[in-house]
Image 1 (cartoon, rainbow, N blue to C red):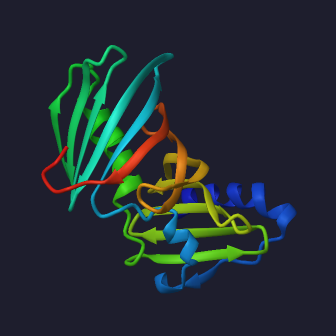
Image 2 (cartoon, one colour):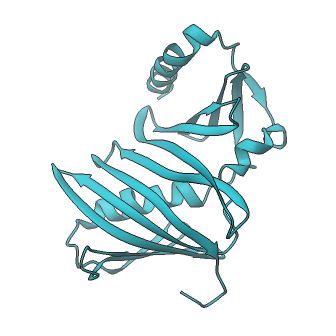
Length: 223
């Protein structure tokens, strides 16, 4: 397990630290993480989003729009195909995943473990309960988040104060690589968020390209 993780971490370090000469990893308490780092994922407690999503799997592409709603701990994801017909409807609450409707015919396991896992990765992160290590210089900050058999390697742009990429590793196996792009300020919520996210799911062998079109605060009980 440790050997697999170290191989992934070493490869990432070699790709970005050889030229930048990053110092060795140092431990850091969650409360001392850079404010801009946690702000990169500071979505409202309750929100609605409209997104355009391109799913690439098995040499096929699926283009659809999605609505994601969060109320307290529950996430509801509804996707519509090109002509407006229902493609998929998921409810996610912690580790509980309900497939409400699946006209898409996509297999259940990739939906529960893959797509639902991708959604939880983006919107259910708690940065305050895990062990962290980091490297930093004027250009890059590399943070390594560890809890149990799971590690997440965050590569960030220190100057721009933005997260660029995250690599999730479990038991030495790369689960997903996520790229965060095109940060912009959303007036509707008063926050800066990545407008484009690319998720390469290595466990289930697909890619999601997500474009955030709109986000706003939601009212309880309203879709």
